[in-house]
Length: 189
Image (cartoon, rainbow, N blue to C red; front, side, top):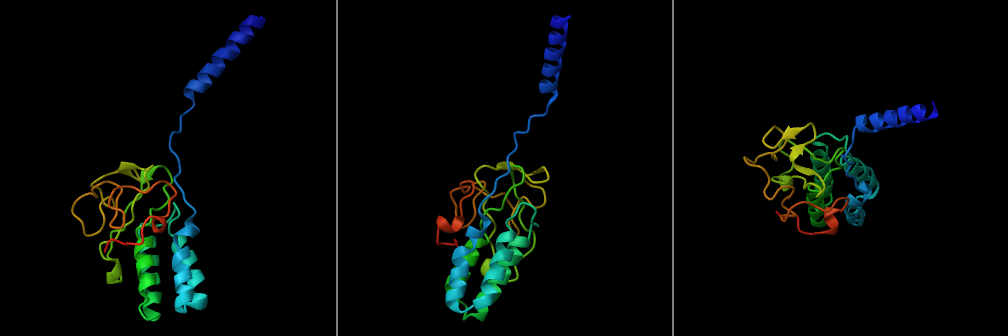
C-alpha cells in the first residue's frame, strides 16, 4: 500500500507540474527618478526653484508601466513650458527632448505603444520613446502587432527602423534599465 501511495503522489506531482503555466514574461523597469535628475538640476540652476521637483516627479512617473500612451509627451510639454518661462533655457529644453525619448517601463516584455497626438510644443515634434532592448520588437502591450494603432510613432507612415530606436539613439534599443540621458546629450533634432 505504501508503494501505491508513493506512486499516486508522484503522478499527482507530475500532473501539477506539467499543468502549471510557464510565465516567461518579465517586467522591464528602471530607476525612473534618474530620468529627470539632470533636468531638475538644470531647472534649479535656471531659477525654477519650487517648480522643478514637482514637475520632475510628474514627468518620471509617466514612465511607469501603467502610464498612458501620451503621459510622457504631456510631461515633456510641461517641462518645455517651464523652460520657456526661464528664458527659453536651452539646457532644460535639450534635456526635455532626451527625456521625451526615454524608454518606458514594460509590464510584460512587450514594446510600449507610442503617443498618437502631436505635442503642444514644436521642440518635441518628431520625438518618440526608444524601447528597451529586452522588449519584443514585433508585439506591443495589448498584443498589438506592428502596424496597429499606437505601434508607429505619430506622424510617421512606417515602423521604426531599426526597431526600438529613437532620434536620440538611432542604433536600436536601449539596454534594459538604462537612462538615455546617460548615453547621449544629443536629442537627435
